Figure 1 (cartoon, rainbow, N blue to C red):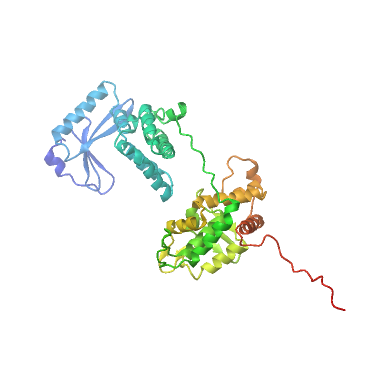
Figure 2: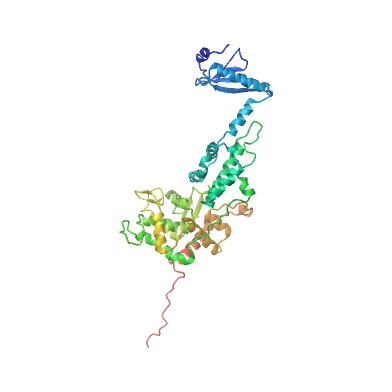
Length: 421
């Protein structure tokens, strides 16, 4: 039949599948209609030995005559031995923007919300590139932007480019043309490695020193004694709320080596008082992490139960989860004179463990570090009970350094005075 606007407008939707109506006037030109009533102009022709159907446009976006002209152009391209389908695909992938590639990357990867937030924050330094096609990002652009970002923060500049490199690697694998050729034949971020332009960032190695532990721990323990409505002292000490909760949090991190959010996200359901263990389910390496409780940690958590909410260990009954620790941290720093971060406590735990000559595999297990490509580690099975003695030794040593546990048992000796005759 000859396709006309009146004829197309009157076409009913099929109950199942799709229905095609071909035009007698122009071979290969037709209309496709689906059960939802969606109609589109199409063109079908044999290309390099294969029947290929190409959608021209939805009915309504073009007039019937405009659609016929598009079909004629497609027929001409095929007559010139070109493949309009492949050309369209190449054009489509070449026009993929950094914003679209980022969205696809985040959808394809099972990333934690905190990681997604960090990626978006880091890529804020490339906000003006988001609408740019990925294929248009050059090595020269990478070098210039990396240097500019490095003027403010070398570490952040490196992080931004590492995230960008991951997204472009994904784009190279995901967006390919008909022949399988990738959108990107080379990742432009490789320029930084080729020219050795990555900023050298020294790994933080700060810990609470043995000589600082006693004064630091006294300041932490004193958090529980600070009144919530303390009047101004004139010393710049911040007003503190929920000091007892911050105290318990800092002590637990120091004595377990947990990461900041691992400890904050700990639930009562993951604390087994019968087995004297705690389990972190949401970890960095996505593997559950079970630790034995030392005697001090067991008593600390037992004492917390009446103070905390029902779900989270570090929550305030009737006030939600513990989140803001900056005032407590500042108070400890002022009272002790020791500047620290929460991650410093994890490093302190690891440093103490190593100083006690605890086996390296046990230290890795306590910190929930992956064994990497260590073949021997694949044969070593470290159970929770295997970690119980090392955990207790670490707790005892830290508490002794902190002045909270005697360095030796004190025995009362019998008097040597002679009894009167």
